Length: 83
Image (cartoon, rainbow, N blue to C red; front, side):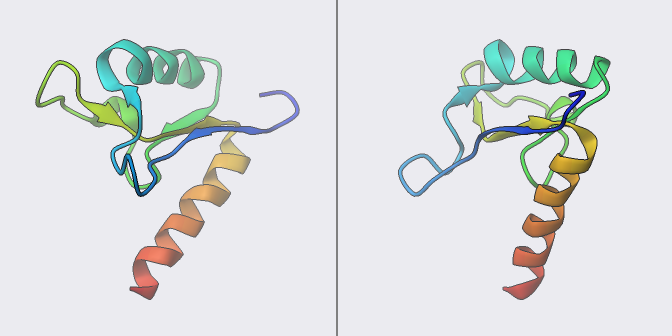
């Protein structure tokens, strides 16, 4: 976080919902990241705001320093607006 950077485990064509489980991996890492001053998102939604539908629900994760993750969020927004 001090020097920037992004950790990403986004969805792909094989796993569009990502591979990390929300309750066991995504939310705990997101909580720590946000407490340390970073951001954690799916690219479209803050991870800590997701209400799970099932216990093993999977989500894409992008987390890191605020400025770097904001660039990723901006790219997702531009992509969504292009469609």
